Length: 457
Length: 159
Image (cartoon, rainbow over all chains, first blue to last red; front, side, top):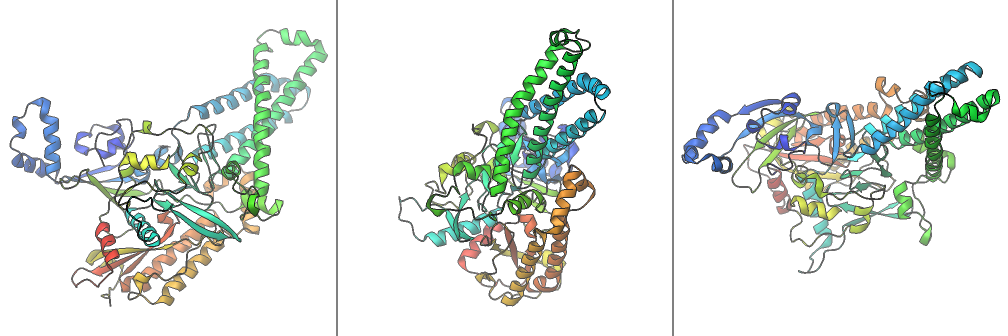
């Protein structure tokens, strides 16, 4: 793990030697600090490097860094596991909320929904409650609350992220691959890392993910925006600010469905309201009324938003209803995995509309395997032997072993390295690599951050 | 034959990790959670084949029960949808209940069968439901049993 990478990265404050960053507020709030041998070590370093106090201030940082690499400083502290998770997610509420890094479009979605509904409740509902029925605003409120609940549930939950392989598992898989490939002549590219598995009389190819160092389960895909492998990956939705995968697909579908209903509801009652007022006092008079009672601009804003939302959201709901009936994901549909060419059929479909819908919408609710809020020990050890300082962590339940945390090493890079995918789905990494390994002599070694990143984008 | 250990605490304190063996997922029945029932060759002289196969079979049956799509899962899904999934804040889902059962089953298996043989099972949930990790230990005091050269390199990298 290299120090000083990306000061904005949430991991940089964790990665630094704590005595340098003790003033960091986030650091104090999240974990306990247990400095073992820090004071004695300072003296130890001074004894070892008597030149340290003589160097001028300009070179003192370099001298301290050299001194650090020449001695071992061990600090143990407890942190929540979400702080050590690789990938490009942002976490809030101490790991309870998990989202993608770019949240701007999500805020826009929230603003449009809340804004339009507020205008509806403020200007239409009083009139309609009096002249038609109080049930109209009542159902509008219920529908609005349901939409918001579904949106927040989709945006804040773990979509089904697969944790990356720990070093031992990664090494084990590499050894299996090398055993399967046999001897590859020098200079020749090794064969692509693909495993074939038969599901329902259909051969499904499992591709190897170079970032996560695992063979992806069927239907999983790597999202290059979030830099995670997601189980039953559907697509990355910027409107909800998160990936849509196994765990939150049903919430996403409920969100689009309820939003369609809400949009139709508001649009309809907008029209009804205008018609009723026009019947009372003429259409143009209705539109010209003073801003206090019926603002002309607000009416147009609502109609515009509802009109565009109607076509896009209702269309999206229809598309996802079609996918659910076939038990397909957006990713599979875009890639044409089960398009029917060469007698390729969807092995996951029950060939029955009701069964497929029930499985997708009413199937078991899978728990998150990320364990964001679990506690873990972090031992920071800086040694002179290795090129980068290694950090080891062990969970409380596991045996006391010292192992490098592989996820940290490939990901200590600045966030700007990644190219966000333009399309909503993230099949860039999937289709471009096709499981081909880069030309490296020993893939079992820990790879540098940039090489690991390039392999997967 | 491996040194006998008496309990899990002894295993953790007096033993050193030699290697880790991984039992992979079996996707032949779709995306349902299921592990291969193949006996890893590295465990030949550590544990009887039938014991491990029995453990894996029981785990597979638990996972099948958790992911069963039937009356109870439909009821749970519909009730949750009707309450905008707020009910999940108060109530544990069936999958979570089964995972707790699995966790206690693995703990019990470790105490009764695996720890006395110098092995330790890790709950698949801690490894993303991808693998069933079996850690192989040896007593620090005694000489090492002879693992193969490939596992030695894995063991040294694990250390």
